Image (cartoon, helix red, strand yellow):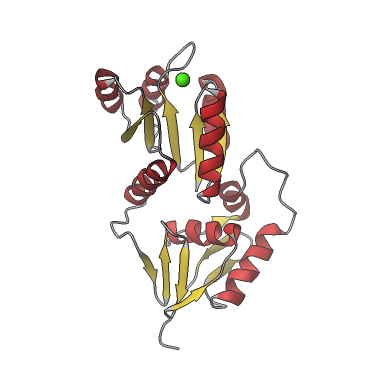
Length: 224
Ligand code: CA
């Protein structure tokens, strides 16, 4: 999933970006709200980690602006230990959850998973699709009960497809979910290669090609 992090503290921002990337997310980290605001228009984020203490317009101010504009993105706010009133105000301003600093990366990752699960309408912690079982907390994939080794990007692609089971996703949409702006540009055929590997490792029908449009989650028959 693609996460926007807005945190002005360089050490904490770096740690958040690094930790969330290790958890398998694409992460774009911004240190001021104006940049984050511009980024929101430019990429399909799945969740935001928002520090409230920012120079200029603070996190609360930005959250009000964004919610006022109808932004539905799940937002987790970061607050100071003694900021009870701030937390309440943050939740009232449209935050979905909060964490108190200092932050444990494991807890942040778990809370983001819960937010993403809720926003995708999945109540179950373990996702199943026919013969496929996927655990977003461990990133473990099983096909007909057998563990399957996928790379980080293959797992991320599978997760995006499972998150939108009824949709056809265009190639640019999928690439934007898999690659943040920090690294090098993906190779021209990177997506096709990941799709090829998913089909080979799982089942040829797991990813459906929709000609001229993109890809969609395919049938995962367990009766063949
Ligand atoms: Ca701060």
